[in-house]
Length: 398
Image 1 (cartoon, rainbow, N blue to C red):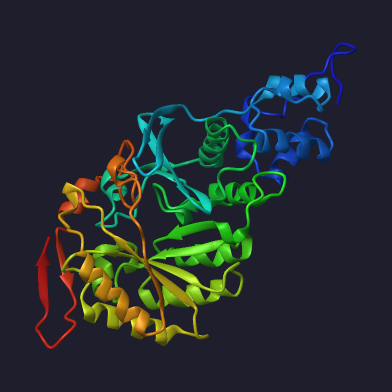
Image 2 (cartoon, rainbow, N blue to C red):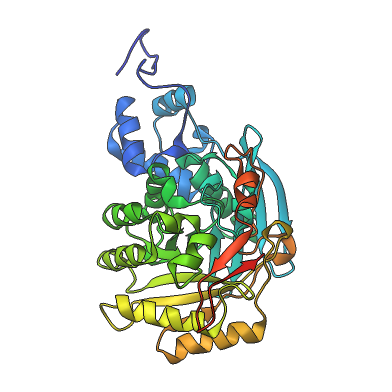
């Protein structure tokens, strides 16, 4: 729509100033362009410039009409997150701390391997779930990230790494939503970010190479299956409700059997034919042979097909506030053997980036807590362990 003086384009009044274009998936960007009086193919061109080429200056976008570039300058931006720090591990892992304002900062981690480059992305400033073994949970919770703040982690990392490695090829092949926060408690912002990762005009990733990790928000697992099914990883960490109630408080709302049923429903839509269960190995808490046998029974009880899940055993990365300890390597190996002998695909995660606090469960960032987490954690210093043998019910002080 042409308004005002001849030859001068003005932005329609109903287009809000100023919009971060990283907030949009392709459909959202097309709707935005339509409000500017532009056709959908312009949104596709713009989307490619942003995500495939990493452009943040509209003047760089040479195949866009100058009139559109002027309109975009007046009402839009491509705004990355300020980088507070970058840390590099001896194993090649890179961790960035991003400023998301109001005293909050989140972390993202790049993990290079021979056959892939994986980026671990945060979805919230802090986390409200409060798992006992997770450093993020001990920081408390401030707020959800926007879609732009989620996708900006990938946008920055991909194009920064291309410069560092002097390549025009894609560096990040996999994304795992396993950084700070519970992704499914920030669903509205998560799904557009996932769609941008998957879109061929964006990052063009396979659904099998984008993973959402959840502590078990059952209703949102069902929604994700319908809206944007990607690979699913479930933070299980216990074989029974009594123990999981203490380790993963969300279990009190969505118990294990409900969670397993949701996982089976998800499989009908998932890009992989299995669900990954993550299991953090805690010395003397959840790592005994009897616990492994309970997991075998749990998997068999819920199996609709032969192989429907795999287990990823995670060495615990200790931090002082947890009061917990890492299981020994022989204990982890014995635990894995019980699962494997029962026909359950089992791997032990290789710890990466622990020398820069970038390993699983170590991301803490900086969070202005609104949830009184210290008070809540103090009430949970005792983990009640369900008896797994003939002995009486007992408590374990941790």
